[in-house]
Image (cartoon, rainbow, N blue to C red; front, side, top):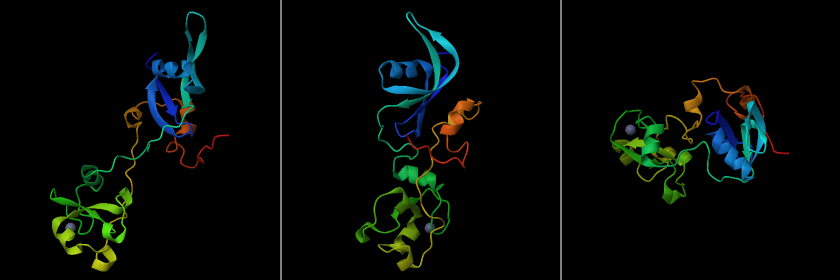
Length: 177
Ligand SMILES: [Zn+2]
């Protein structure tokens, strides 16, 4: 039971990760988190009986992008499946292209970098795709990262579903009271 999964939400109610009951109890005892949902069963400690937490919420905001990966050449190539985003050729010989070049004010962010093969990168040079007469295969965006992927093979507790946006896509994002 101490290793049962507990869904951890950020202070903003966004899902952050999953920990075990043992870790959740430490957070609760240190008053770093509150219980939002309980699971089945009770834990008997020396002086008290606890409901087993199933969903907890941190009382402080953890500032890190939850569902995005760190921007790096390698991650961009993986996101773009080692495919040049201009000509569609799959190759290992790729470069990182700033769609709007940095000299034109383009930023180094997930939605402004793509994988480009060497010939396409040379052809585009320091121009925007429009200036170079080139078209992107698709608009770049941050890759979605599902920290619960390793849990997807098992039945997730029912009480988690309202907190996991992809379980109920039509559910509006929860706004803390
Ligand atoms: Zn290309």
